[in-house]
Image (tube, rainbow, N blue to C red; front, side):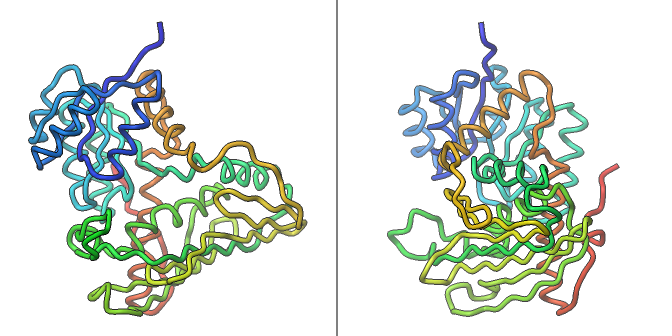
Length: 335
């Protein structure tokens, strides 16, 4: 009989619902409980999925049936909730961003190390079929030595509207961090070094506050990153662009790649990629369950994603200082 991981989900918002729906359709994981500080939301979700409802974290963590938790809460809560879960002897999947500071990332890693528990971060784009194929092509040297990667993620994201499916805390720097960096950036800053299997060493970023929507924070950034292998990545992001795009170009010594989340063009010819980005959540949760059940290290483990968060922190400070910065200044290793 196949082993099954029993989990609790912390939070019942949009991303939590995505986790729960996916859990319901996998064979190696089962939902035991949900927790939300809004008791009605917790109860409604629990009834829908035949789970137990909690509105205090400590009560959910005290349930001995629960082997692992999925943390799907506002960004500033991630660190303390991960640490509490590890101390309660639970494996942890935490949604991106891992945390809002490198210091908190280190605390999370240390807590899970002490408890000998899995820590995985929801870097779902690592599981998109097109991204897996790109990484394979680059690893195989299909386009030769990579020199330049140029990536764009532009959209209009307004969580202030009453009809929005998102909460207004995305505009609160204390809770959400700089939105373009900590809401969307964790995917973008993560995927570039992951493609190359080469960490970022130097960052030079500039940002602007283009509109009044994100008062007190920059809403658009362009960041140039120099990787350990000599490649250069350029990432442009905005959350106030009314025409959306999410694409990239990779230039190598023997060819080039253009891609979106669904399409891959190699040297001007489209390459068929089986599957779709919609499979990403299923594949990452399946990986998490397998890692917990077999004591294996996940790809997007805490130390791997700490580098992503160090690059984001470097980009933030580079834009403030108006100068290039070394990622090593921010990526302080745990003991």
